[in-house]
Image (tube, rainbow, N blue to C red):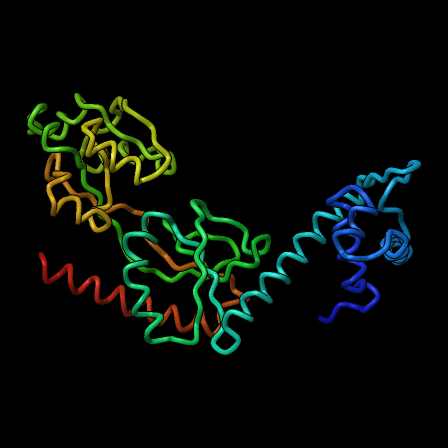
Length: 306
């Protein structure tokens, strides 16, 4: 439903208000916008008349936002930023459209990025912008994001989820640590320092439970990125629980080895999530089709290697 025009202040008025709110001065806002101070003052007065409320407290030569004015300024600033980003995206690619994709750092760097040139080659009109997000977010609040790579359960309120890949994790460590501890049984791992990922705090407990060991006492270092966990394992600081398909290069080079050969498939998996209202966005449709093709090729390669 279209918004009544009376709720849409002129753009130049909003720009004057945003600048004055950010700078805390009508004079500074006028200098930034190349206007006179009186012009900025008139535009803000016009906005206050439209809102039928004051936005600034005027005290002699200073101005300060009211509480309501501060909240309104934040909303206006975010809206202007979204308009600017949309304009920038359109100017960068006026014909094919843009896909703003939120990615998980390790999955994006190790699995998605090496494959993206194939998408760009087959969809030359589409521009992909990548941003990092570690946790699910509200698509309505971050409406500049068209889709996201999600790891976890198929549960994201307000989003449509397409299954991508399962995940098999393996206990990995340096060759020196494996030789030092002589891991033979699953329980032997409890004698070594275990490396923990902040976003998966119970991963080791669930892995031990899948191997038939419950109520184990877990200890070890806590790290906030897979990259740090991996480097810590290579540096002989402990045993890491790693997604096998994301770290195949480290295993192939011998930087990492299986502490013990006990892979376990997680109940969580990777999904493509998108807000229901953007499901038909053409660049997203093209990306979804391409992604499913890449996932199929990935699965075929795994079957051939096994």
